[in-house]
Amino acid sequence: SFKYLLDMKVKSLSLLATADAGSKYIPILFDVLSRQTTIQNLNLHLSGFEIGIKECDALKEMLKSKNSLQYLKISDSYLTELTAESIAAGLAHNHSLKELDISRN
Image (cartoon, rainbow, N blue to C red):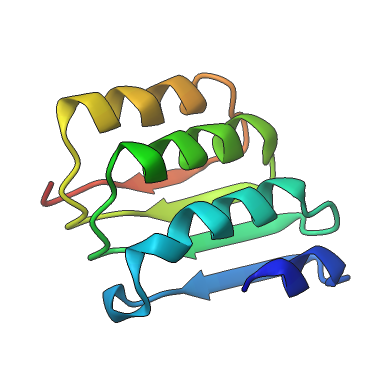
């Protein structure tokens, strides 16, 4: 579980996850990171995961609340029009993201 991230007192976190880690953990990760308060610089590299509507809903909520996310790479994630719309809804509330990679979807 990623709940240990809630207790971290770090200011910067770069997370590189590989698809063999399992897509089922992505919503949990997004939920925990959205509640983590000390990280000021967050970079997520999650390419290759199949990101469906459940994962996108969790990502949307994280994008709304996590204003330390600066880089998000979700290339090769099988995004659909519906999942892309969910991500866009979260991005409308995010003012910290500097780079978004959604290539090869």
